[in-house]
Amino acid sequence: MPDDVTVDLIRSLVRAIDEPSVATNMRGHVAEWESLAIVVEFGDGYRSASGYAYSGDGAVSPVACGWRSIQASVNAYLGSHYEPGDRLPLKFLVQLERDTGRYEVTFEDSDEERWKTRPANFREMRQQLRPAFD
Image 1 (cartoon, helix red, strand yellow):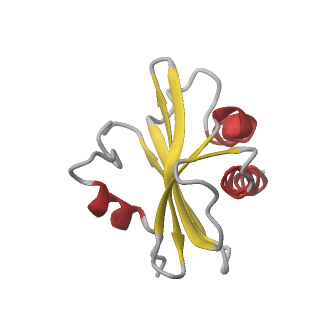
Image 2 (cartoon, helix red, strand yellow):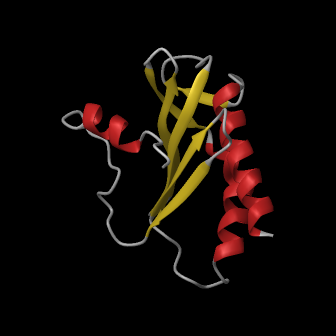
C-alpha cells in the first residue's frame, strides 16, 4: 500500500506543477522540467508545498503547489506511515527525476530550519535540494 500512496503523492505534485490551473507557480508555467524538489511543510495553522523545478537547460524555477490540489494525497501518504494520534513530521522533501522515475522522500521530524529557503541562501538551497541519485 505505501507504494501506491507514494505514487499518488508524486502524481499530485507533478500535476500541480504541470497544470497551470492547479499550480501556484511563482514564475508562470514551467515547461520541460527534468527534475523536481518539493518541501511539504506543516506548521501551526498552515500547510505549504514549495520548491524548485529543474530544466535541462540549467534553469531553476521556484514553484509552489496549491494545498487543496495535493491535500488528499498528502493525507493518504502520511496515513500510510503514521497511526492516528502519532506526531507527524514537521515537513518532508520529495525529489523526483522525471525521465527515470526515480524518487526519494525524506522526512524531517525536529529541525524546523532544514530546507528553509531565504534570500541569503536561495542559490545554495536550490542546488542542495536538486535531486542527485547515485
